[in-house]
Image (tube, rainbow over all chains, first blue to last red; front, side):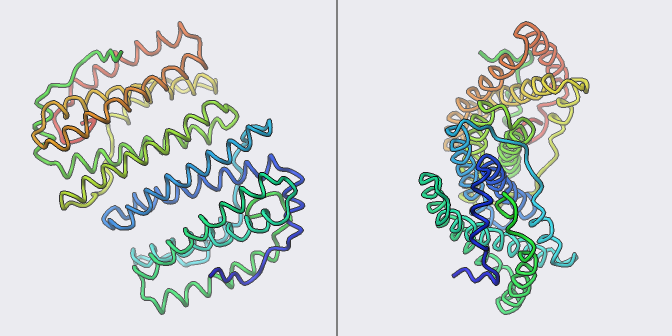
Length: 193
Length: 193
């Protein structure tokens, strides 16, 4: 289902594991940002009742994941650190050109959100298969399925609100751009680092 | 428990009831803004583990209330409208002077949040006792308890992170200011209007 064009080098998991407090903090804020993105879509497109319904449920789910990550942080004697800038996401949102077409802006946002979910899913898979903390490995395995579902949710909405053929073309372009970005990543203890 | 200094004129409920779509939309966004405020406190004070724990649960609860309101909107054949500015909250957040004291800023934010919850609770009570839509009346009755709990949560944290005596003095001043604001309100179909 997920067809990212450049897989993460599994050695990234070793870098991540060397600083569990950092990766968990970054992960917690990824969940918070996902919740905030869902809320932002509600504010921008309140009239799309199906989108609002799904985004409000999604925001709630992302906050429950935040809580789970926070519990893992506290359980290990750590504290949630400061939010760190997500440069990957910062570059991703710059891919699509600005447009006065409100509907197309929605499609763009949905595709970017889909890709972040897809990459997060892949990163969680790498963590679940490579880190030695068994409890966390299991946790990341369980979160993979959610991220995959969220990816499907965003892609489905993009195809609903955009022209199917055009959306698939935009998606392919975004995937190619993302693979280029990923060439320079996989080197830091961040979920998208 | 809630000691607001100026009660809402129950006639406000008649104004609200005349435009149920509008009041429900405004209410939905109140819940969303409450969730966003909780998230903002997490981002600003990530090291306060007890606050982060409670605020993440609160954000989730507020989003579940948002979902409930949205269901009431759809059930009545309406759509969520655009977010409207909350002038009441806008004036409330200007009450406390800016301060370089990070801890005091937290106390200020907690007290303002407590007051918004307290006033929302009171407004929900007025709605529950005065509107003719029985289902909505019951719904507002059930939400009152949550708002009262949130008020207690914020006041408790304010007293934990601030000096109890000072906090009580700040709270009293804020209540007096809020009562002044309320003199001009109660005239529009907004939860805090």
